[in-house]
Length: 89
Image (cartoon, rainbow, N blue to C red; front, side):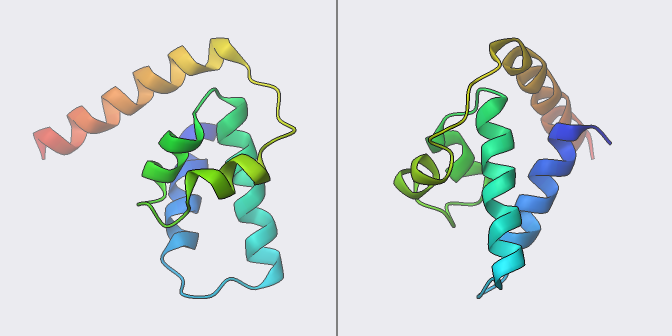
């Protein structure tokens, strides 16, 4: 499993919880920053979280992140592959 898949899987797992403790909230912020660094927008990160997080909150948490634009293309490719796997099953 690559970095993107791990981040998305972990974010989705954390968003299923009704209440996050301090460590879980810290990790959620790290994941949001990691996804932002991969060129995901706040809106896209919100969608990945199942809308559990508001884009404006994500912007606050990931404001200091510098985007790595070359990772975006890889991320879109991987997401496309994941979607195709789900369609085939």
